[in-house]
Length: 251
Image (cartoon, rainbow, N blue to C red):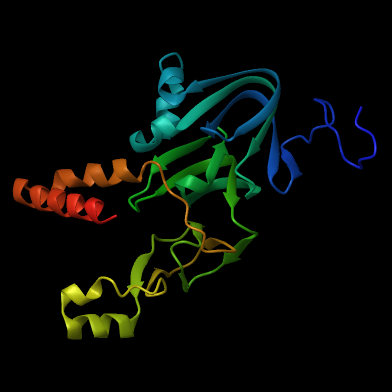
């Protein structure tokens, strides 16, 4: 036993049931299956197996109906069994949310886990996924989550997601656009302040924001961009390739 320290110690009986252990860790009382992002598991008690989504789908046909996002399949696993599963995300705040017959779009890198009663789909907004139905999900944020109602403009790096409202449009600062038109299209690049672009929300619903503009790398972003290159003709694809090579050589 460690003496001289004031701290909480846990076992399978004292870990919270579907609740936070602290602001940065969440305890799932697993009795069946949950979808979890790769790397989110930090500890567990009990008999739990972790299988890639594709591998688990080969013996459980229902997975294909609940996970409809080919770009993110390799980034997720199915946790199956019984026990206490502790989820974390690099010291970021973790919150649980209950969706009731709802529709929520969330930044893919911040979604950590969700019950299979929910259906995950790929959003038309790059870097986001959509949860539909009724069930619990876990999401991380850099700082406490802020909830806002439209009409509202959000910094793309601070935006976590939105529920029950239309997808946003992109708004560009008037002065930035005016100067860009005056200097020509080439002048639009290299003058970014980080504040010239926002997501513009209208209608009704709820917007989720984190309390910072800390940008996280989405491991699937390259796959997203690559999938869109199919829209280019051969000449355009070659031009893009040359520009990417030139950019890489400058770094």
